[in-house]
Length: 333
Image (tube, rainbow, N blue to C red; front, side, top):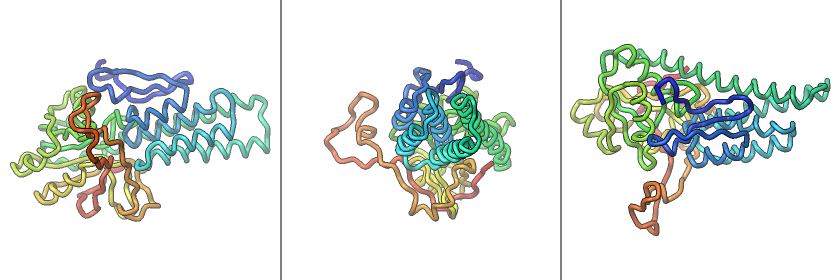
């Protein structure tokens, strides 16, 4: 695929399409479905990942639960299935509630004034709502990039963690969108992409997107970040977020806290870039953010290759938390 051709998620003619991120960067496999269960499983398996993208996929999952016939019970069944896919990224729940509130309001209004073509009219209305949710994220990505460009006082070496580009959102990304715009304005010297253990979202996905965008980069092990900072080779750090608490504490991909501490020690600016949908006013601080624990085999194996004894004990949190006092600024839309 050319740079302009690749996409993460899209909806067309009653079908939701997504690139299977577990196959990247070696295979650009597209899944096309009108089954919300396929979307739910894709979120669980990280075929669809990135907080904004998860929220968008969930919104379209609810839409597709109504494709054959409008049914409140079927909608709520799909809602419950999708909300239990992953617990940490708040965008999932934002997307679900966005659709649920609208769906229930539609049903309520129709009880007062019945429609002739009930199923078709409601489905079209829901379809437009899901498309609106995705369009809002596309605009958010653009605004984040525009708001974030001021963090570059000079042509800079940037460190980033996990994946925050088009693969994680509906638009050009969060932190990645800032980097991409900075590159277009000749403000990027080099990007260092943490591999991001254990599933290598940095070395597989961020590197894939940096390469597509023609941005100079190097993949590093997660444990190399501190050494680069010590050598004075990092000017700033920018990452995304999966949930932001009311006090400004952040949850992001495991390993982000370590980078924030290192940046603080070396007096390097540490930025978070995220849309408003990532803010959770109901969470007071990092201590209340639910952290997803994932399967041991993500550590004990690479794909189908076992690298250590699966019988050993493992602790595999998908996220860690960054206190607000370690964050220079949060860039949002």
